[in-house]
Image (cartoon, rainbow, N blue to C red; front, side, top):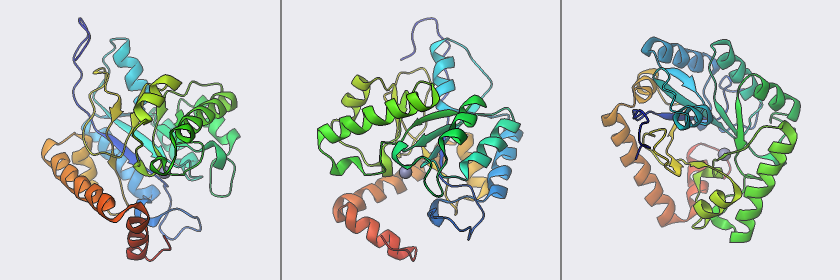
Length: 268
Ligand SMILES: [Zn+2]
């Protein structure tokens, strides 16, 4: 519920991107999750035409906490810290927009990944740099102590490296651990950005922020309607997400990833 005296905010869409690069680019990005720079730019044009400002979850949470109401927004997030996200951040900054970038500190500076100086420049340009775990290992295969270690080490590394607070956590692969919400809260995270489908209402204090994955196959009209938090379309996406979750559960993660990889012509 909203705190007394605060304006109620409307539900909005939180979009989840990965790499932004041309199809066939020489990198290790999963083509299923890769959006071309042209498609991304067209999506940003569509949001502008709708009067929806692209904002980071971090900034929207801060506005809601301060009782500030901004223009209608669409929240933008990126997972994995792919090197191509530097140019995407420039596209956003040129439009006066911001986004959250969830990175794995153990991979920062590796081939095809953003470096610390690049992340620092992005933070200076107003981007929100947050945690995607210390490594990209899925939390559902970890002990509680390992989950706690990933939450703490990644937060410390980003805060030490950039000097900006880390308050959001996106679990790698969207995989959850039963102790995650409790451990994240006790480590100082304010919310989890998940891969569950749905809309998010800033200021309601929800511990989980659902997100909508923008894929190579997501056409402009669908992304445009998501950005408007179109309830019918999001309900349909949620049904599809539940079916995928059920499949992961039935098959087990390893088999699910191998099958998906095989379907995409990649190794698991
Ligand atoms: Zn990831």
